[in-house]
Length: 425
Ligand SMILES: NC(=O)c1ccc[n+]([C@@H]2O[C@H](COP(=O)([O-])OP(=O)(O)OC[C@H]3O[C@@H](n4cnc5c(N)ncnc54)[C@H](OP(=O)(O)O)[C@@H]3O)[C@@H](O)[C@H]2O)c1
Image (cartoon, rainbow, N blue to C red):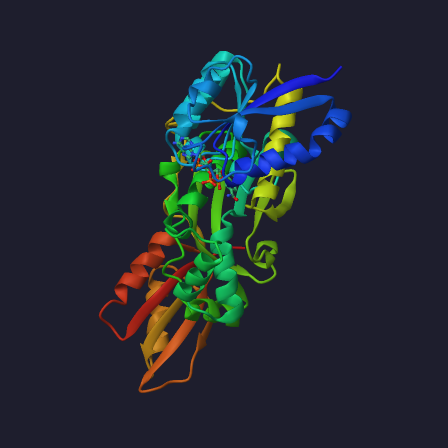
């Protein structure tokens, strides 16, 4: 006997269309393999006459209530994007006892406590595999496969647009603005690229990832965020010469009751597995007490890979309707007061500076860093022109605030610091 599952879509653009096509193509195989008869009965769009979709027009509606309160719909799939009204609609669906599947990291990261409370109260499920890393099964890996372990670190390339831009800058030596313009022409970056290039998107994803990895709510507001808009071709070239590759990383570390969460451009040694994840691919590197090092990699966007993750959630929800997977922690809006969030982390630093080409300048640079307890791992100097030269250096592990103090101490002197970029790995 097969089980009928009726879906209502909130939004039917790129991703909604991708999910509809996957379910259409795979319907008979899923029915045969899993005994689940999945049907899309309604799909919400802003305007039916202007809808950019090829799903049957008869299932389209402009009224959210046609889906949220329809007793025949079992699972509501949210693909609208944006925080509101998506989060409100998901909450209402959950309050009506409907399981929700979403790909929306922003709405989830900012409203997870309310959505989780509504799901627990009505007994419905809340699934969000596609909200981080597209098709990469990182949510289920953390919440199911690694549940017995203690994860101490997650480091991810979770934004395909910025990885595409940085990869092309690295491979071609091009400037940020030129590659961004090209990515916009190719449809790989939005006309307003801020959510990606300023690191907002990666920070929403890091909030979700670290909350489940560290079994405690990591509010979005706790995340330090720095985008890639200030990265130059010269920075990338300087790192390359020293054996480093630049990535926008979402980094989370937990040591006891201290958590560190940050999104920023990061140099990685070329030998690090994340350094070889190029183009629009995503990857998440995980370290745990028992699993040790592992990495998951795949397509972080695109209608088909994202649809694969979403449909996996739909089938999982259908098969586990009476025992939905819940986060293992108290899902509060605020962080647990027993935790501290570190703003003075330790890592290595890449520093590029223009210096006067005269005896003693390099020694004075080393002395300033030494005064803050920072030691230098390696340094390179370009040949001098017009009495000026460029130095690039990598420090050993140092305290963030000590490096900031050292850099401030150079102001107005013969050393002009152009770039300070953190390094991991
Ligand atoms: N694109 C990706 O590769 C990708 C990957 C992972 C996750 N996601 C996430 O998936 C979600 C959807 O992305 P997408 O690329 O499919 O977006 P999209 O192409 O812009 O589609 C959005 C859909 O939602 C509808 N919609 C938006 N606001 C609405 C409102 N207020 N009322 C009713 N309908 C509304 C739109 O209707 P109209 O058609 O009438 O405009 C459209 O059908 C986002 O949360 C995104 O972050 C996307």
